[in-house]
Length: 561
Image (tube, rainbow, N blue to C red; front, side, top):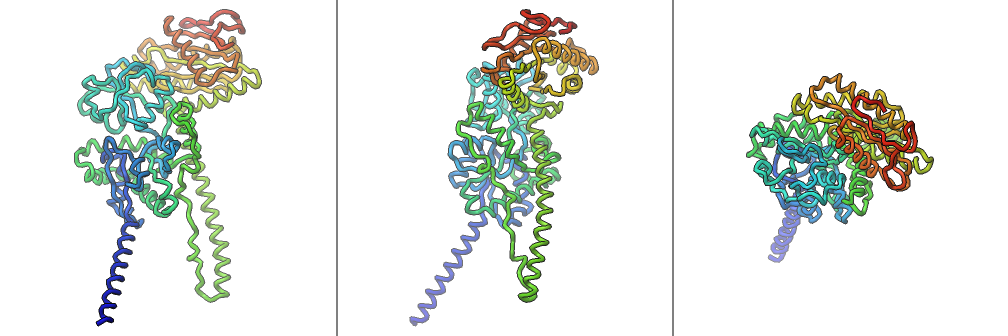
């Protein structure tokens, strides 16, 4: 009887161990993904990966949790209630505050956040946001929008309202500007035949990643294979979703039954533009671009303690070699020969593959860098690249005593072109301006598009006289572009020019603001002109060099500097 009792106890112990092992294995397979908002096509790649078995193929059982107001993916992941999350470039700020988050893949190559206004609003430009009632998400939920306000020095002048997440508040006049997603709120307005306009932070050089898949450091340290498997399966899901949007929409409808197929199709088209799968590999992250984003956040005072980007970005492509493939099969002697041959062959193939991967990665990084530093409509350098080059020009001016010039250009009455002849004609005009001015500028000069109808020409060398001549040639090129496109409005250009005669106490942002002020001085005095000033001894002064020393150079309509 004692033996029977012992055997029974032993059986129970073994059964308990087996159950415990099974539970541990099941628990090891289970992961939780915390979304940043309610279910919608914005997260279609993850739904596809789950429903088509990509996660199961990777040995994972994935729970996908919807987001909602008040739910922070960072808090959920860092707190251990979720294993993976989706957030924006504010992850850098979270990391700088000591939260151990690591980025795995940037699904959106640019932010989907937009300022949205009604068509009859008198807000034509981001600078017109000063003093307005603007709805924004808490913390860094509207990071790209907040960065734009900070960049323009408007963060203290606006009346900030907590977002209600209801576009009706814009329609009903409870707010003048709404924080919206380009894939969502525009659809709601279009369905109601309500004309609207948007301001895209990217047009002002705010080029942030968004919908970044991330995890916590504990996961990458303790379960790196699981992290890589989950990320790769997710990217596989996104690949399918973008290649087969119809099927992805059907899958998404099971998660978001309240959204119509038409709404989901609108989302799918908008999100494809954000992912840019035809230009870069889905999920691609360029460490250099992360560094640029961090530099912007530091410069704007949104990040106070810079983070190590190499620690922040987790490389999902690192792999350990599976040496079991080289196990002996034909005896010790043959095993050694096979092992040596296999090693040589393995390294040859691996090196070739690495060379291809490095080449492909460099191409992707080059494309990503180009996207981050150039305007998508005109192909010109954007604000980010202009500020970099202007900073270098100021440094050279301090060292070599050169006199760089900055010409700030605004196309007069450009809004009339869009209103009377449509945005396509307006876009054609901007492209023509970019083409004609680029053709007439010096090789060493930089012609950039800041935003909307604003351009800047950076000249590395010259004086006030040369600056006036260069600005005059640029204005002539703009007139040619206007004539070529055939606009019906009274369109011209107002140009404010700053020659940096004293570079010891200026920075790129300050120089742009000074040139901007001069441009507005031209507008106030009748538009269609050029005004040149030197920056000397911490002040804008009348030129002391050039053909007309001591006189302000204002060129009337049709004139030549």
